[in-house]
Image 1 (cartoon, protein in one colour):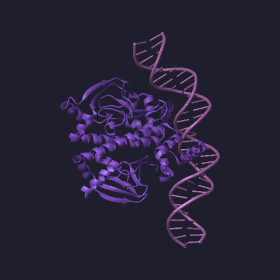
Image 2 (cartoon, chains in turn blue, purple, orange, red; image 1 turned 60 degrees about the horizontal axis):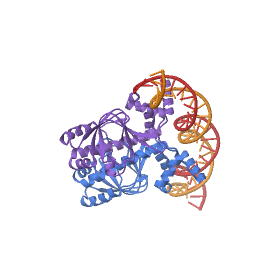
Image 3 (spheres, each protein chain N blue to C red; image 1 turned 90 degrees about the vertical axis):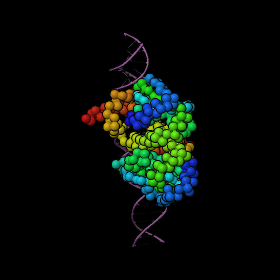
Image 4 (tube, rainbow over the protein chains, first blue to last red; image 1 turned 90 degrees about the horizontal axis):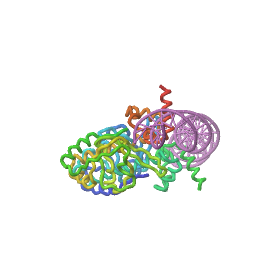
Length: 188
Length: 188
DNA sequence: CGCGTAATTGAAAAGTATCAACACTGGTGG
DNA sequence: CCACCAGTGTTGATACTTTTCAATTACGCG
């Protein structure tokens, strides 16, 4: 449930040696908002280290967490292709180091570096293939089943993520999450 | 809610003139299954005309519909990048014409045709950007709100899609869908 | 006409949200 | 050093929503 892409990160590490002017390294602290929904940006980011959350907020202030992003995950890249405003917000959970690259230079790399191109295609394909079953499972199964599944995928998520974030990721209230956890304890 | 990509289709129409050996045209009838979950394929498809549904089925036989695909939408392409089995099933809703192309030739086009490459990148970016708010909205709002929203996006979906498909798309039971529709009628 | 699929409806059971009260924690300022 | 505060987490009671199950009707097609 915390997405990573080591191959992409490794390649970008080497790219940033070759093109030191393309990649700017930035550091964000826990709880800083890196990207804000519905704003326009000229750059996108790839995570060097740390964890962020990618979430959508609605008019009532509720936030729905799409994904937790770790090493090698990019964000803000969709806007390169759509030309639209940012469709989600990104907030640092831990302290985070990122590579920052402008849309133009990103496009240039896509056009001239076939290895990079392929890695990005693959990264996007993975994102699509990941979202589908998650949405499906979340709708079709009980909260308890979802927690069990999350434990299998990422055993100690409770140490890394706040209860509130977990609830927002699952699309349920904190109350329901707590009850389900108590039920699971009893069930043992 | 029925996804299309006219630009991609137009370009593939011209490509299929240039490379008639790359693109095979096939026709499927309503209710035929074109792609089956958890099987391996060497080809992928782009829709020329007609509508399909893309769905995941779980062990209880319930199906959760990811998207309805119309003109210019591709499917089976994720497996080119992941190398995995098909992660969803595709079934024709209306009669459907598709272009079929092998993984190898698709890869070749991606590598040698920058316009094609860009169109595919854009198509994938759109898919990602579409899924996120849909999942979010579906979890955060009531069934009635979701129906109202679907009506805004696609006014006469009830003429094209069966009630069961609509319910599976929304991740709810047919019973709940019917109740919500009755409520909406009353509300007018 | 008769068959199977799709659609409709009611009643009971299960699941989830809402609201509200309270405990725990770490950090800040007097 | 303690009091306070804000953020986070816990718990109970109640109201609401959705599913489940089952029975019935409507529709299209050979």
